[in-house]
Image (cartoon, rainbow, N blue to C red):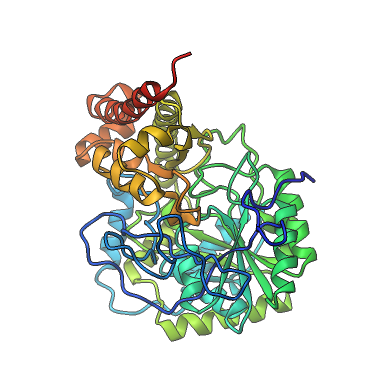
Length: 479
């Protein structure tokens, strides 16, 4: 196992890494502003060990006090959409089901559960319908799973950074979320030593860590955790009695599927892992919320499944009948769905590689994207020129790039990273054109990067980062 420092920030009192925690909060409304990404400052309190309340940030504001120009961050940006028109066969399925007045049962109808079983069986994860639940999007399922596993006082662990929608559902239940650092080579899966240290310290402070959420194919970093790291982390987590929720939304979007090894934690420890897949990752449009969860085939898995159905029932979290029909069709993976998925993955892989090259050429840091429709960039090497533009944290970086690029560019604080870190997620869907005709042409073209609308979008991206690089070069001291 690799030994890494659990956190680069050291606690002044005892020399150890401080726990990076988000406290539980009650539900709050979404912001009313028109921005495509909710605006705000990091709401993750950093608690002092001397008992005198939350420490103040470098800008002089306590974590619980919103700045005048930024409201509190509660809800993160949505999943990166593919930016493409709806597959005609899916539209036909929805249209055919639109006249039905019956309601889907909570957890999904038998046909949908059978389709989900087939989907996972084809990926080496055997299952039966009575261990499957469907819901209107992965957030609803994660909320129900979190309530079932940790709603009675337990603590939740997540990687740092992590998908923006994970932490709000723990906060909604009043549960604290502890962020665990990931290793340098990939995101989505915590470093095993950092995980063990975090569990030890949470328990030493009277906590009860019980749930770990992770993702092998990751949002926001667009990386795929190597099997050896995954094995070490899952082994450490299960040895500490943690139940794992594996978010596998992006598993079918590998940019190089024949060169990238992706394993599910459920293949390693099937009795301790619940798998959640949002179909917006590769099978359905982002605006058609549908997701499925696979529970362990054990007595504990049966009880968890039953409890999740209870929570979904209380929430009234049912799939709309037309969306359920589309989900059932897509999970069966007929040729039109498979062909569209493969073409979409190829397109976004090419655009993501070009965007990554532009970002790195300007001096920023970014891991090569391996999955999904996004990349995660660290602009720390450009901190001085950014400061000259009034950018000193991730929120200000988000504001600058969103305005400069004309597309959402959520800062790393949306994903649990520190507000002071200059990190940002860039999605590739916005680079495919402004009309359905442009996007369809991007999908079918053998050379999408040479299309005028894609070329212009990439030039705009490159120009924005080149401006920062040029500013950085002017900041360099003469040799």
